Length: 498
Image (cartoon, rainbow, N blue to C red):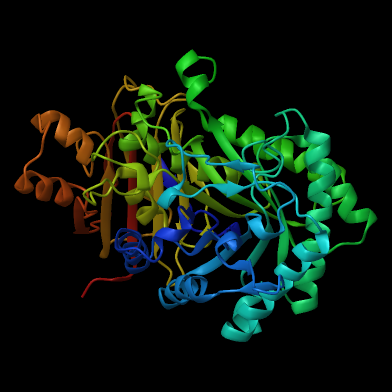
């Protein structure tokens, strides 16, 4: 039996309905807008991380002075604001016109270039005063265009994953962490000065850490010693990697994400920043969203009920950990490299815009309230997130999954009860499992190896989230059949029907 108590033990804000939209320059393209329009219409995502793409904005005029073209940048931001998203802006990458090494480039993608044939410059600037001026000019521009009241609600961070070779100083060896730290500290100091010049109300942070704890500690020491503004600390948390999945050395488990977050927070607290807002601005069950089954067959979990179960278990474990996470953004990289519908890329929709279980799990999680309740049960592999909604109703999200999301976990039937009498109220149940709201599994069962236009429509319908039960409570316990890696949401209306 699963029993939901009625007393709210604390307010739990929604840190889980956010994403990193990649590539940023798909915001002006039809396929990118189709995704963003859906996210906005469904209320799936609140804050979206995007790159400033300074390399496309800054150039030198005929006199050699810095010049700016904000037209495409404004088009992107206008679009995001119109859709109601809050923004996390990552200030990168290095504009070639101020790069100390124009040949220090990286693609960081499955192909030889990034989207639209681009490379990124990863070098330090020739002069950090030029970087400061660019950061100031960009910040002043968005303040003038959108107003400080709006822009001060955005998150502005300096660079992306500066502690690793693909994103910063790619000409240096992977283990040149101390050099990267020294140069990044200069980069951040100039960034902070530039944004404060534009407005002291700007919310700024970094370092969008990939993996090096020594880098994080050294950065925090530098911030403290130089009395720099740091409104939030951003880290990345990936549970495993394709290489480790292939080798069998690091299987899927949310414990890996939790361990990374705990290690980062321990470093943060030890360096005196324990009260600073913590943002996980990229998360994934596995890194390398631009890899698919070609590099790692096990990445097919991204198409199935396993990923939705992973997401809900991660929310549950982070809530129970007590870590001060304010936002957690799934990284939607790799979505521009799809050539077929189901191949293990990390995104919400397939090539033909079929919603995956992970997307529908976001829709379910978005229905949770902010009043966190207690739940009693004795099921070892069951995660329960019980909440009271603002209007006094209930939203209870459950996932039944083993430590490593084993497919042979025995099915069970449990009953759901509430301490409060809910007789006469509307109960609605949604489900994601192997048989329900799962286009990939349906394609497998029906042998749709090369789906026709009609079959694609069937798969799209399968991916549309809809209740499996809607009824008026009669006071009896609600039976729930739970299968391996299933996710269920139960909502109860605040008022009696009729």
